[in-house]
Length: 212
Image 1 (tube, rainbow, N blue to C red):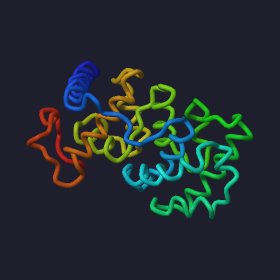
Image 2: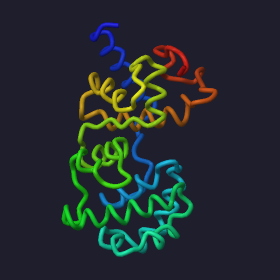
Image 3: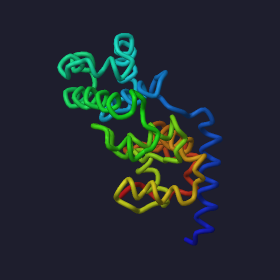
Image 4: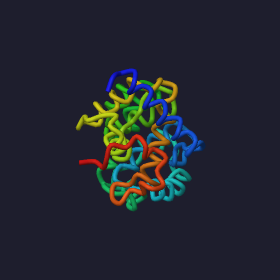
């Protein structure tokens, strides 16, 4: 498919998603950049619903880098036990809080590359944080975005970062985070990994089949 035809296809897909999910947005509950960082780290291999339940209690006690830096990992682990991999996450978050205090004045860095240097923050997590908070032009690729991009023939790359690069070629920077949220909603509600609801799919016309 030529670049012009692929661009036309992507434009039609994004318009269909906008009609189907006009209010799609972050599912994690947060009030500050630091709270989003914490919640996003906790969301790895854990549902947003569980993270929100945990942080609703956690943020009543500790809400800043200073608060987290003063904790021992074992103390924080007790607070986040409902989240998967909680022992590792507690270590990451305490260490990250100390780095933020020592290197960034307690604030969350705006650029994605700096975020990726923080413990427990990979490319996808950094993309979510920088995209939501700082409109960085990121289009984070999680399992839902990866699956749908492949099914629609928008990318054949095996590496999520390469999938993001393929999508970003045809989606303007200002629209990427919104497209991410809409693809996420579509993956959860319709284009599921198993037994996708193809008869109800607003993107069925452009689908090239299930992920191999």
